[in-house]
Image (cartoon, rainbow, N blue to C red; front, side, top):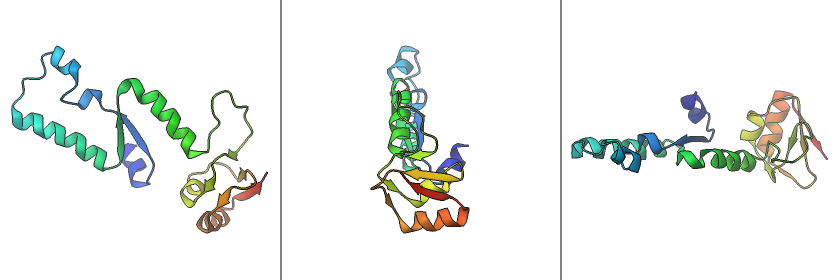
Amino acid sequence: MILEGLLMGKPVLAAKDACDIDNPVRSRLGMNRGMPALREQLGNNLKKVAAYGIQLVPARGLASAAEELVQSLGRFRRQGEKPRGTVFTGKVLCRSQVASWQGREITVARGTVITPLARDLALEKGLQIRIE
């Protein structure tokens, strides 16, 4: 599932604590005595995962990072906001958002910028873009 998301250009979040060789919990558990080459390789693995596009965050911050990400995508309502159906709340509707849109209609606020590629893809997919 993670690979699919990365290949589709989707944002991916992951908790880094369990795989971070320098995590203080590892030291408390005595898991900080490995050979330097192993420690270096494990550190490089984290860098490689981040280079693939996975945003690594501390486990305690995973929920808030996910909420921020969802809100930044502009396709979901914020906590406490009343549901309004399939409404895009971002400022710019681009092709990637249309590509992953669920439903037959995208409602956007007046003033939302709709890119030409977004319009073209919506037409191809049979999506109606309605300006509110």
